[in-house]
Length: 493
Image (cartoon, rainbow, N blue to C red; front, side, top):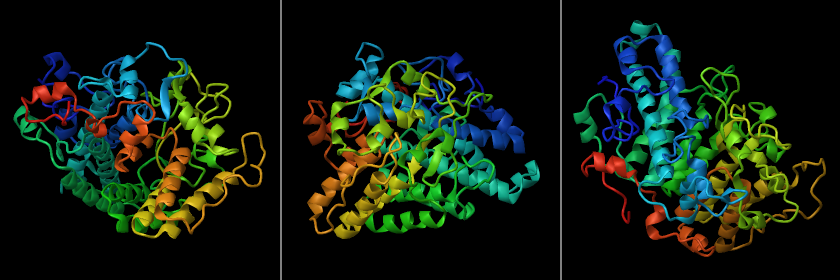
């Protein structure tokens, strides 16, 4: 068996429950541990950092070969957060294809469902790759060994600290406390020791520390690289820190973090769709962190979700469509119902890239409008209802002044301002509404419903059997079994 143990956590990707052949398979696009650890080079560190980004991509089959039931064909956040919410259904025409997605939609899934399994393995694989780079960068001899400059070492360290934090944020918000692994795992005994779960508060504290360090190492500019704008920036580290404080209900910390973003060059675009338009990528002001999909790259780096949409996947629920107010241009910019195009995900308004498994459409993970609404929520929960309304109106104003797809301007009276005199309960309902229509199909909805404590109320009201146990997804049962109970399952599963 090779020293490098290909693991998703330490067990899921370590493959303890699989055969020896599985353990000998190298993850796609990543160097072996022998190559990286025994002879670290500048090229190796650069490639390993790039490989750590790859688990955020929607490039098809980077974790296997058409393993649909294992949830490994593409990143599963769209399945768990959008199909799992009241915004999206699996397909425009309901059929028997990929029934594991239907189980997510109806909350009838079990501990072997591919959705949680895929999310677990993608994120732990990303953590594994980031940990290797972090370990090298923390080696006091690495500059003399590889010739890397201090500036470049700090850049790669900051990127991987952010990436590891992002992957852990996804794990904690979906599974609760999970094993916290901060160094490469190179032997089975250590893997078993690390399989025990760490509580959420401790993990969040680690992420705060990592993100603060990342922000301190990154330049005070919108992009950390003028030629590779996709790389993690100071704004990305600050924004993810703000999101952690939001989820921790540390309301007083959120506004100050969000306020730093405008000083780095981020803001609302004049046109809502510019954040998603493929031709506007890296030439707009709103996207803070994206995965940079590219076509004709080697290895492949295209957005495979565009191919999946060509097969009829990802359609809006009627309940989601009904949420939009009259003449709100965000509705069409999100989804073109007559032509069955999810414009926001395709990065186009005419179906361009639909059916293309190598599409150059970026995946947006953090954008400024989302951050503004975090600030509004924090202000509301701190008692500043007027301040929250001001931000909600800022987002609404951008929407109503956005030129519609046909070149027209929404008529007068569209999306009127909310009243700053409203009480907190009313403002909260406005905020819930605004996040849904502003951020639809951006993998935020179910997480929002859960942290607001209204998931059961909202989903049960639509005939979806959401239960208390569904506040967390189940950990893949194969990983629980492989640790002989050291890794415990979430309650109710």
